[in-house]
Every structure is written in structure tokens, then in C-alpha cells.
Figure 1 (cartoon, rainbow, N blue to C red):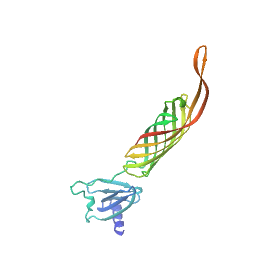
Figure 2 (cartoon, helix red, strand yellow):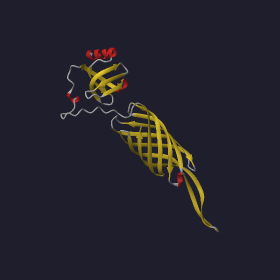
Figure 3 (cartoon, rainbow, N blue to C red):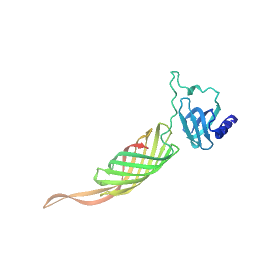
Figure 4 (cartoon, one colour):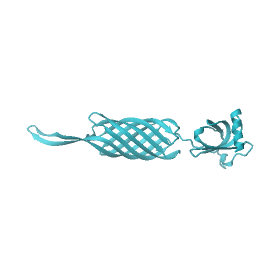
Length: 246
């Protein structure tokens, strides 16, 4: 521990001290290499044996251990027996900060149709996204009308910070009616998987719709259908969603 503190202290003064260290990241990755710069409570920069440079912020680091550079570099950082270089650690594409996503979904149940939407917000620690979004929702059945604009808050949770991760997403808001459609509470709940920046999920959706009751009548002009009653109802349906995170 004293040796590590000495290395880090010299790094602050000189910022070019040669030291071999191991960085343990909060996402589970472990990186071994030469610590070439360290700023306490801010950043650390490491150069691996294959020449790659990595820089992490203080919040991304679980712990750091180090030894003097005349120590032999651990074998598991030299590559395999065939002489190929070791792969650099996986870095999650979901960087903390601004993030957005574009999705399309196809639903069926009380309603049949599709929704196009985009969401924008903040990504926390690779695992939680919180944002707001909107889109265009189209239904092919008469009970809903034609078009509505869903406006909603969205929370998405990634189970792990890896290339492939299970995801859970919840949306809650309202639909704004267009044409003869009706607005009201809008909500979705879905489970799926994220592959790097691609998302695939299945879930349940609820929205307001409008249904009509007609009655066929005959007169001297022939048979025709008259509107007898119009009701607003809450409908439910299942959906399949595809999305991209950016």
C-alpha cells in the first residue's frame, strides 16, 4: 500500500512516472499496464503492453494496485502462445451523460398498428437511463381513430454493463389525439435484451380508444348504417419493439 501511494504521489508531481499497475473498473473489467498519468480524484491514464491508451475517470474505478516497472509484466497481458496480442478490455458503449434512442414497435390486441418514437435523456453509470420522448402512433382499426402522438417519460435499466445485457423499460405519459382519435393515459412495460447499441424487447401497452355502435336501417333510399352510440374505453395490447441507442 505504501509503495502504491508513493507511485501515485510521484505521478502527480512528474506526471510521467513509469509504473506498472492494475486498474479494477466498476464494470468488472481489469486492465494491466503502465500508469503514465494519475490525477487524484479525477483521472488515470494507462498504457497497455500492446500500445493501447486508456483513460478513466475517478467514478469508473473500483481500485488500483501497482508495482515498480522492473517487475515482469504478468503473462496474461502478453497475449496467447501463438503470439497474438491480448484484446483490450470491453468498454461499454453507454457512456455516462446525454443519451438517446430511436424505437419502432408493432402492437396487436384491442388495437392493431405501429408506433415510431424517439427518447432523449441522461445515462447513469452504464445501467440506468432516464429521459422523455414522443412519437407517432397509428392504428388500423376504427375504434382508435387514425393517429395519436404519445408524449412520455421513460426509464430503462440495463442488468449489466456488457456487450449483451437484459433490459427493462417503462414508459408513462399521455397520447395527444389527431384526426378523430381520442387521447388519454399511455403506458408501456417491456423486457428484452441489448446487444451493444441494438435493443429487442416484448411487452404490454395500454392506451385510450374510441368504439362506435352502429345500427342498420332501411328506408326508401335503401339500407344504411347509422351511428347509435360512441364510447371511450381503455385498451390493452402486446407489442414487439426494436430500437437503437446513440
